[in-house]
Length: 269
Image (cartoon, rainbow, N blue to C red; front, side, top):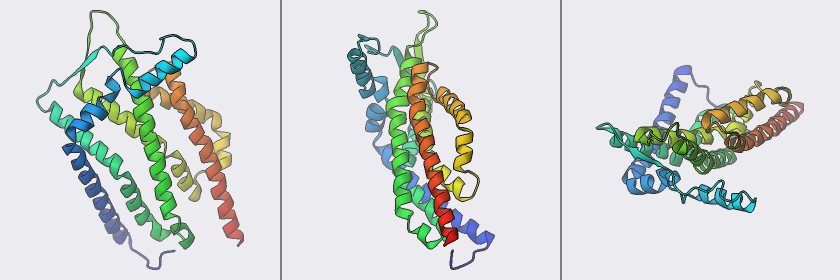
């Protein structure tokens, strides 16, 4: 354990500095994103708005390969993006930069989190710091890519082409569009952290592999509900999003089992 005992106030002070360093890192990365405005908006943010986006082209190729002709091909996305408030574009610029700053600085944020909790861990557990930071960052970035290349284009395609009448034209507000992209990316990134969350919950005794197996069916329902929340309300999109989450759930059961096994082995020794 830690060589030096710390009071509650000392822990709060320590936490404050770790949070401050994390915020500074996010702001610095966000400033870089703020400066690279043209690339961030024209290439990244508005990428899923273009009909030649990578995901749409792959869906079209898969559709043709499976013999569905051009069922999943997109010739155009019939909507425009507008800003109807004085500070709309500036606000979108700020929040998008902060979001991207968090994504870029995520490994450092995780590192600060680890530095805060590591004094309360055993020596052999502290030696796994690099692995923890690497795995957490890898899972988060995989989730971000999944959100950007799968969840976002599926949502944009469905919502951007959905109409109730030919009399209504889709003019989406800039804040609505950017919020959709940010939410899809961040939600997916955090969902992919499920194995890490299960690892810590198992360590503190709140979760066991038996418990996760027992409530697997309920978890399946929750996963489908979550997929319905972050994707358009069509079955195909929900299944596409649900599959990796279910894989992560099964992986989390395996991780929980390994943690219990290692803890039992340490107690016997």
